[in-house]
Length: 316
Image 1 (spheres, one colour):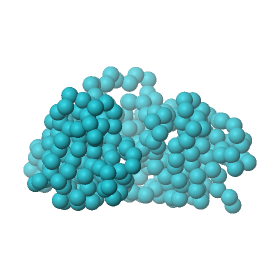
Image 2 (cartoon, helix red, strand yellow; image 1 turned 120 degrees about the vertical axis):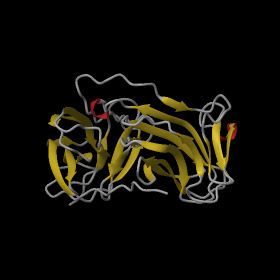
Image 3 (cartoon, helix red, strand yellow; image 1 turned 180 degrees about the vertical axis):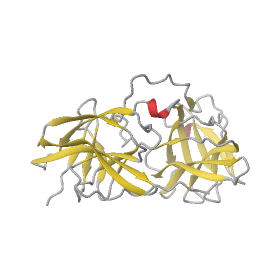
């Protein structure tokens, strides 16, 4: 059976009646010519503000002299215990450097415990274009020596950083989650199984949407990790605008929630699959009461879902 090809062309929204006011974002754009608190991590590492490393404006952070994977640029303690953050950054390798994986990681030492290393976001980066790194972070235990740093799978990679933003969420379970894909990225959506995600110019609103291809099963499609973003027992309104790709005559699309308890997955249909004619848009909307959740996905009907891939959270 030929798998459906779908276009998710607008936002998935998790809404609550009264979202709290945001605290101020922490922004590092290096436009004042200083490193704005960032410094070298590891012996021999050099951190320099230069126009060559700028994504926007006239300044960016150039990192060189690395000799180990955990070397890089770091900043001390920008997080407040108990407050969730969305963390984004743009990265590019210096000219001539081979592709590698750059990761934003938090090091901290819980009181009375051992130092931990927690992955915030990671992406494959090249010297040809800027890549967005984005993830969320929250810690609740009293901790010392809290550091945010950027490391690389290649011990000697020289890389550039610019436009880093740490956005405090307040109560993350009462903040809207919106994906419009207008920045040209998948905005933290990831593929389930063999699905391939790509942003394109087919859109319900704005100029861009998310194209989904390469699906091999009914449960295969895009997924968004909402762990910590949906509170147990709270109600949420979810909606997404979807349409079929140009080579698919007809199909059924819906929204589902995957959650895990003690490592055992379960699946809840939020919006029952509905017929979507070729070339037309359809809005899927529902209200759901949230259990403890791990991922939310827009996919076709799912009689026998398979588990999503796990995400690594450890790093040196």
